[in-house]
Image 1 (tube, rainbow, N blue to C red):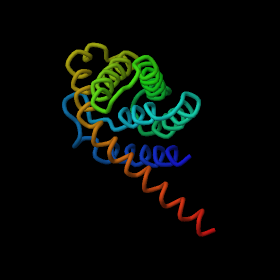
Image 2 (cartoon, rainbow, N blue to C red):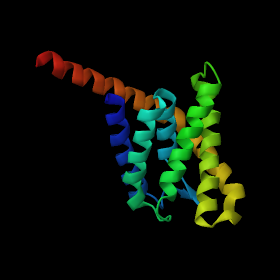
Image 3 (cartoon, helix red, strand yellow):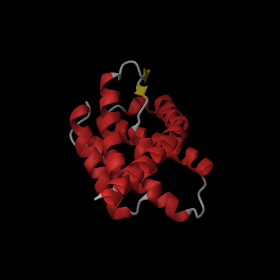
Image 4 (cartoon, helix red, strand yellow):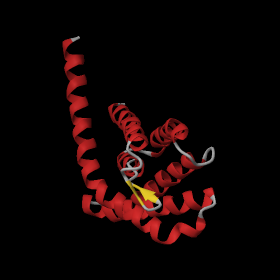
Length: 164
């Protein structure tokens, strides 16, 4: 429950950050996307039913802030989560440094899917790879920050339970 709360609050913050500073974070046809590394972090730590519920909630939360057609962004997030779960289920013992290229691949795949579904397939080649590189570079920082927030929330809620 704590992980879900941290992830959904972080997702809302990231959606607002991308909306407010979107043009400043944009490089060519792509921009830094915080949601794919967030979905990857949650996918590596959470089993399928709970994680799928989170991704659907995050898709519903981010849908009004996107310029894509209805349901495209949610479909991309769900496919990224399912790919993360598939990879983490079939590669035993994923270490932190193994997760970075996986997140880069999943981000590139989701950018390709987003461009195909939105009708901008001619821009796939350089921009999907750039999106994957951005996500791979951003993932270790976000993983550290989200793990720290999860520990902080756990301590806070344990204190509330002990004092009650």
